[in-house]
Length: 287
Image (cartoon, rainbow, N blue to C red):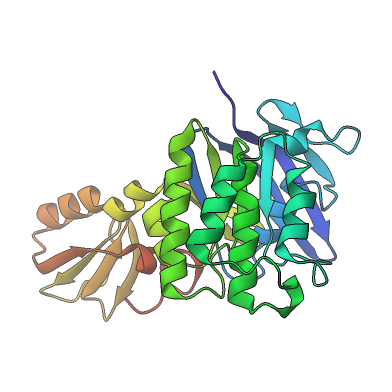
């Protein structure tokens, strides 16, 4: 069986901030979105996966091969698009493409040419002279053609306009059809997560708060409007307002409880993904 990314007991201490211990598996054929507040540890976790930050403890495997500093063979298995491409301001797109393509035996020149046309990238302009949105488009165009089995993207649609974001989403969905690809997506863009993700990992202060299938989350979170004020907590309750509006993540148990207690509700609705994520990573007051 093909293996994706395996993280075992990963731990990183940065001053008084600690990431982990993290145990996660990212399976081939799936897209996992890493979400959380700014500073929750998502981008640092991505750098740890790439060995760009030194871990204090734990192991990382890409398709069964350990990520280490003693061998760099593992780097050909993964394409990483960071939030910012540092040290490249003086280079134009053609020069960056020549450098990057030489490092990846799987480089797809035909895909690169097509993406340049799709995003209308000015390859002859220095990277530093491009707007933040076009820089991000070029970053993407230089990442996807590496055609590795594992793709790690840190805020890939940041600074992009709505049309460009949709193009990126479409291209990523098409890329996943090439085979048993593994994608890890760090993003605050709910539309990216809604359209692309199979699984969601929620980071909170360096810890994994939740790891769940996206569809399970959207099925499990439900809001109820009650006929009367309810003083006591109900099974699965995660938030309430004025005692009459209740949000739970166990609707079956909640409704069974209501029926047993003779509690009636006037309406019920499932929460949108954005609401669920906001509730998980932020305040649970106000529903």
